[in-house]
Image (cartoon, rainbow over all chains, first blue to last red; front, side, top):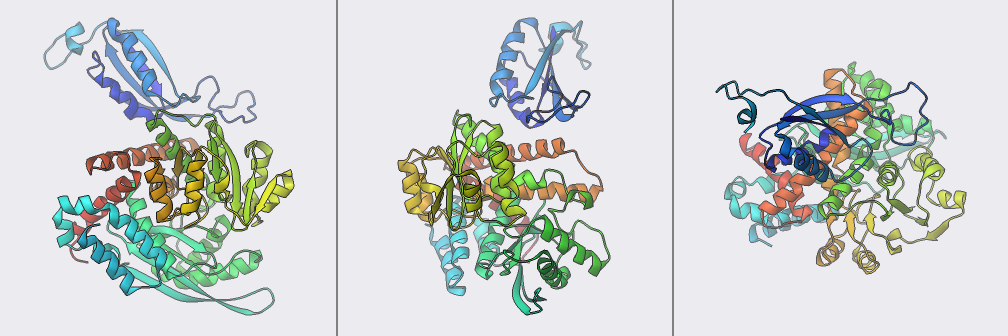
Length: 113
Length: 446
């Protein structure tokens, strides 16, 4: 199983949530956060001195899916974000050792189906 | 149009025959509502529309002041408190010689639906005066504002009515008005929005209407599988809304090629950007100078006596005032290849113009949806005032963009639901109407 973490603009949350329509995504967790990337939060041709940075509000959307579905989900997330501006988002993929559905005790792939 | 709707509109005209802009605004909204009354007769039974077209309260007052030469001047002040079903009255103040009761009522009426679309708890109102700020000294403007607020303060308050700016009322005027209010009531409250940042204003408020227009426009293009990259845009004004719209449109990769005022327009084929935009930004909002000064400064073409709608463009965005784009202009734009039009001003397109765009199948964004970013950010300013905290610029910008996306989505979904897919006018009018009408039903016959 893999965890897909998408760090996106807060106003694009609905676009990404529609990825639920993609088979393999049976839920997601969303965290309000803030951050910046390579441009350190400056995008408008401003005069940026070393050490300066600017935080922007972001949403982190986490999904756990089976490995086979990773590429399809990533593709859907990228397609749903149509504006393609700097600061749009970043996706990280990591491995998940196990998953448990607390109500039934199911583990592994069964827990995320 | 429906018999019931016709009779309401006819009564409005009969009661106040001179208020032509108000008739126009009422008619445009009422026309969209036919499918609502058909599906929901309770709104007709409760006489919601009849109540909505009658302001809850109108205050009209004398504003005397003394000019720098020692002469006594007399102007007329207005505050139309149209509807407070979903929140305290909210709407700007306009200082312009054209201001009269009909125009105040049309603006207040539009404001009710616009504010409802933002999802924030704000009712609708508008006010102002026939005072002309052009050519007046700072001290004259200050004395006028102080006299104006000396009457208005009795009728406003953070939970009652929260005015803001509009044409002729910017940061300077809001400052003078706020200072006088505080002197009279001895309270520091969020009674006005558009305040400067160090005494209760919100970051991003100055940019909000212009940026919000660009955000709504980008949603319209995305809904049509298109982008703003490389598009040519014509606008008509260069005030608060126009200049910040240009800034954000440039960021999206578009090019704005015209600005103007009631005397004519400038054509800048390279696009208004960089040092030219920096020169333009304070030209009206701070210096109150004519648009021609921009043409003179950069050696550009100035066309006397005409509106910019004769210039070929992909997108037209009227940013100046009501009824500035008529049927003939609309036909010219369409013939020159217009693809989209969004109204940044309040009711800038005449009914004939809107019909031309509709017949040509061109996506048309009505002012009450497109320019709602301004009042939405005023709502965010009020929220920050209540919390006594300030958000960062980025937080306000992200919230504004989210609000504009939601407004766009609500207009399209509502239009779809009521049998007019893709019709932003119907979507905006019905979405705004339903929110206010449901609250009015709950609150009894008041």
